[in-house]
Image (cartoon, rainbow, N blue to C red; front, side, top):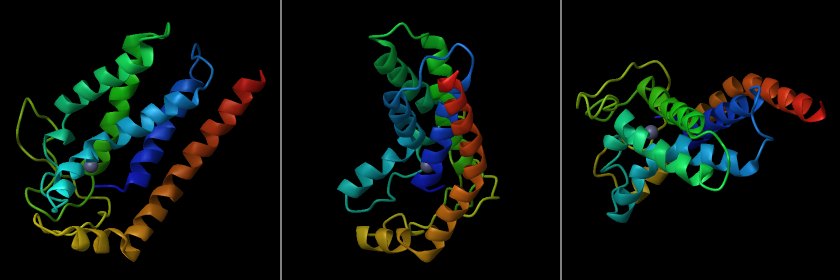
Length: 187
Ligand SMILES: [Zn+2]
């Protein structure tokens, strides 16, 4: 997996890119909040594990699949378009791309905890896939790790390095898109 910082930055980039396209409405902070939530939605699977005292227990399950992505994108689209004239299909497409960014970042990250990778193609296939290129975010390799073990690994120097790398790689894209946004609001 990537860190919540990496997933959030990907959500920001997709949101800013969408707003920069011709025909987009004025940039809205509410919209970017939705993108941040959708970009991190698969990792909400930590919550039931936390409640059970073992955060990793349900991580990298069906929430990391395109099937779950369709459901999340439909809900987000409904919430953001119900009181506006926004085009639902366009909103759905960008929310789904945002969700996909999470799946792709996790797919390309090294996973040391079996089953390795994510069931990205569920409901069409239950097979787990991984293309180990990106450094992993550590949060213990044990399924039954305690909250203490989980947090010790999470707040490690290694994860600080990963978050720094994510910020460094995202920075040029963010800079270009923010510059475009400012130019658009001035014209
Ligand atoms: Zn994830």
